[in-house]
View: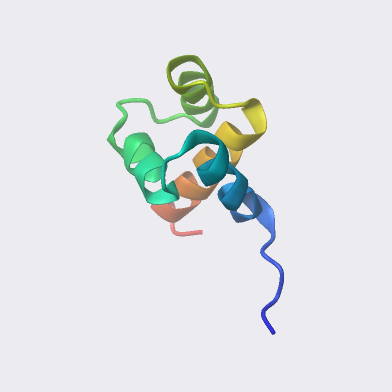
Length: 70
């Protein structure tokens, strides 16, 4: 039995289902963006890729935490 996924990653299955892209592809987009600030990236994902705020926020938070070694 595995523990339930918590935090930003708990959104990943619904993000993949709703937007049709694997999470790694979204994370690659975030990593390749010239933007570096959390809310800049969230706004960009919402405006350019049509993500909802919660989904964009979860992707950015998870990706930036990897970058920062958290």
